[in-house]
Image (cartoon, rainbow, N blue to C red; front, side, top):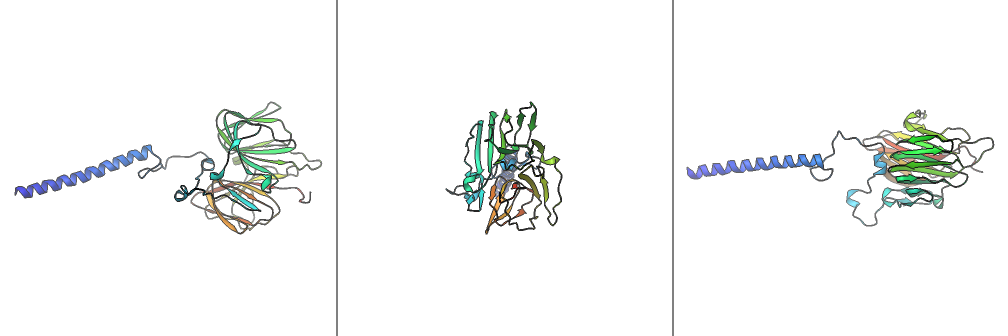
Length: 311
């Protein structure tokens, strides 16, 4: 009887120990969920909300199973297109800017007639001016900047805000804290009796335009009048939506994916892309996009317009 009682006692103790261990592991995991964003027990809270375009400035550099592979990059450069992904960005001080680092993603040496770059402004930073006769467009991805023009008017630009600066307009951009901009610049193609003007706005103030035969949502950030030799489009795709037209045209494109992920066709190549990726498309390269994933896909697109390609 004593041996049986002892066995029963040990069984109860073993059961108690297992239950205690499971309870302790549950509590530990619960604490780690509360205080950690990584690890086996961790999980992000469904109540957390991230700032708009946070993934474009904090992208996934590469799939987890390839992060330790030396030399790995998704970036590709061909004669008529390029995919520039975040792990291959190279930042250096921007000429004539103060406390600002820049990474040129698209530039004439690759075949473009415009530049597209990221500008990371630090504490007490200030922009320089573009070269003579060069127009500038900027879009705020992160932080807040103040745009000042010579008339004395200041504009506060937050995330999703933008500004177009016509050529030779005296202006400055300042930031007291960190801010990230995507900037487009090109030499202005003057047209007789037409002059572009300063424009300041935000995406959410622009109407959704009709896109016959297409399902995506389109906003244009600049006027379509002849004074402007390029435009900036914001294009939204819900998961599973795609371009109906398979585009081949003379216009050049510079593109930055702001949200989501999908598949981009460039020439005969098909690229998985995500927020933070930049794309250059030369004239007449076949191009197409389809959105994947579970969330909206949004990208910002440069397109030259309103000029005769012979000029």
